Image (tube, rainbow, N blue to C red):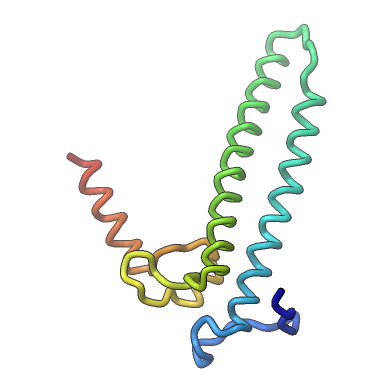
Length: 140
């Protein structure tokens, strides 16, 4: 097992460092793990809330409102599940030494983009090209 890299709490990856050096990799690994932990905590709260909400409400309007809230919670839960899967994928890329590089071009993804969206798999340019192609195909 690899020794823990010491990172001060105020460490922020900088462009003048070697790209994806040990400190940067550890920074993003911790960021992803903290995000996943927060999502799992929210998920547990959601599940508890849904279990507690399963009751018979006689008023039709109240029941409809409750079912709408429940559907929204389930949709949110599904989004969280997909996000956790993307976080796990990013953590796998860290382990494989592929994290931070665009899956299309192989170029480094900017640190600012990774800091804002640590699950990013494409550089901003590749993502924009992908979205333009997607839009063209949708308009057909």
